[in-house]
Image 1 (cartoon, rainbow, N blue to C red):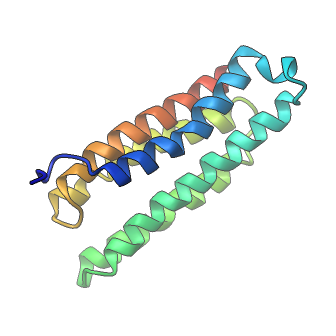
Image 2 (cartoon, rainbow, N blue to C red):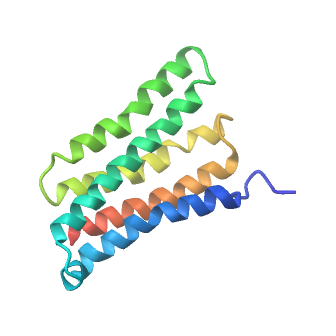
Image 3 (cartoon, rainbow, N blue to C red):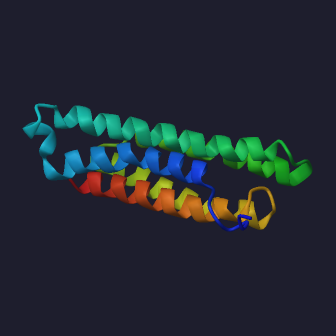
Length: 149
């Protein structure tokens, strides 16, 4: 029997698969390999920023969905919080380089911490918090690396 703290294989595999664009595109930006393979570095960077903003919106959607199981003040606060990642990510896209990728990276890192309340409040299983730390950590650090590249 699987423990409540053990991350199930399907969410783990999907989450790790979702990191491939972050790590791969950030490596192309930071190392300059994009030019070596005949791809515009600006295009690779734009793809990374777009992916980061989409994932940030997805993270807000998780909280929105979980808030639908609540009622009252807690639900209202979670619904308000759920729109923050998409709005902040959208604003990040308007920032100049390197602040766009840097701010988006900080958002992803911060949202991993914000989501730690969901398991504590019983809205998500204990493994969810661990998974969010791993995924937000790698995604956020990849964005920060791309900001410096």
